Length: 76
Image 1 (tube, rainbow, N blue to C red):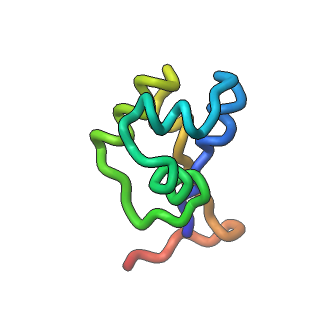
Image 2 (cartoon, rainbow, N blue to C red):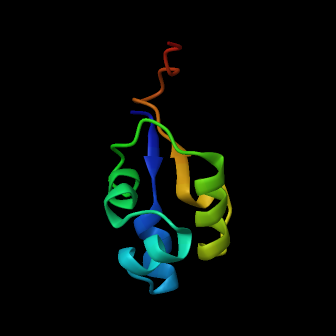
């Protein structure tokens, strides 16, 4: 998937555990792990907003677009 998730980076910067983040955001550690490991198909804006609020960051600090080389990403 061309969207990479950098929650680990922000957790390290904030010296916060996955369990603490999950509790403060209001999601299960299992659901946070799915998102953190890039296996999620979608994320609710409310969840993204809560992650940003707790981690004191912007959505772009958590998500980034990756391409395969210089080729433009294919549209579904």
